[in-house]
Image (cartoon, rainbow, N blue to C red; front, side, top):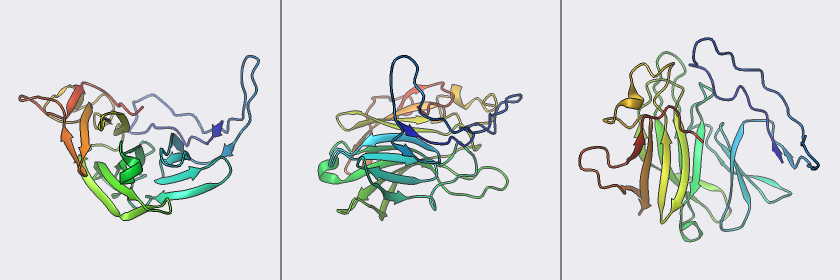
Amino acid sequence: MLSSLCMGCFGGDSDDGFDWPDPVSDGCHMDYDLECSTLLQLGETAHHSLINPLDGKMWIVFLSGMIKSWDGENLEDVADLSDLVSRCHMEQGLLGISFDSDYVESKIVLLSYVEDGTCEGENQSDLVLSSAKIGDAGVMDMDSITILKRIEQPYRNHNGGYLLHVGNGNYLWGVGDGGSANDPHGNGQDPSNPLGTIQLFEFRGNEIVAVLDNSTGDPFVLHYGLRNPWR
């Protein structure tokens, strides 16, 4: 069991009348006739893990921008993106990651994050989809980071950002409605913008390509009308 402290867990610019609970440290407790043991005590907001298809190590993704690799004994740094991502709001940060479908050959990963920006005044940080190459030592080449798409976010919450490989080089990318309470601009119900959608694309030649045949709307939009499709 991987244990972490969830620092408030994704509220703020939140709905009126809702107070997020204080973070708690949860031990290894199981119901029924089962046993468990804590393997890692991470101490910060780790929200996703996935297996490297090349070496079988577990990658652990943190909102702070850190990516770590764990082989069952040792925890090593893959990347520190903290200078690239915004953490002004607890729903911002490094939100998604996926391996290229041909990762064994390409050593490329896809990243979804809210880019760094000022914490003062209105939000100026976009949701960004990027690619990056992993070097032979298993560490990300920061100079290889390439922005593939950016989506303007009017507020700091409801960014979405989850990435999922669905086969054949195709990916789903969750994009939030842009935030604030009750979606004040109606973004989630507006098919003319990318907010509040599930985007479907193919990653090919270090570019994203629309999969859908949609001559009347955004060819990347598979579904719209969503609030905050993060997981």
